[in-house]
Length: 142
Image 1 (cartoon, helix red, strand yellow):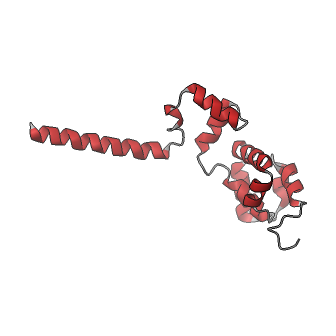
Image 2 (cartoon, rainbow, N blue to C red; image 1 turned 90 degrees about the vertical axis):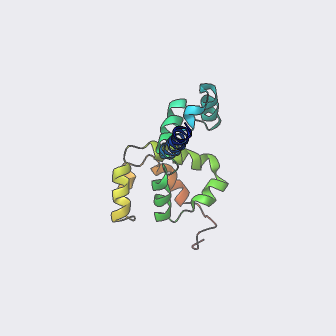
Image 3 (cartoon, helix red, strand yellow; image 1 turned 180 degrees about the horizontal axis):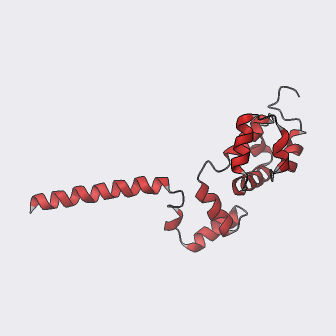
């Protein structure tokens, strides 16, 4: 009986570890444990609809990486922008994350970050051009 109990404990431990690994690969795993009212509150607190919040959460923590790469190509500091204009920064992150041109953007950034083709499809083009025109302290040119 003891051997059976030990085998059951080890299987239970293995199942827990595998479940933990699977959950860490799934960005929505933590949301599944929240009540719908809590998800609604989190979305509302961040200025998002529940569907936008779930879509953003499904992308994981790297959903707006292309935005940071585009900002770097423009010599914009995401940290400085997020501190000085947090709502603007959050809106640009949201638009970038929900954009349907990620593949094209990644390809353009990889091939030639200075190429202005991104201005044809980027939902943040107006905001990024406006931010680029401002005198940021992190830029050496100002």
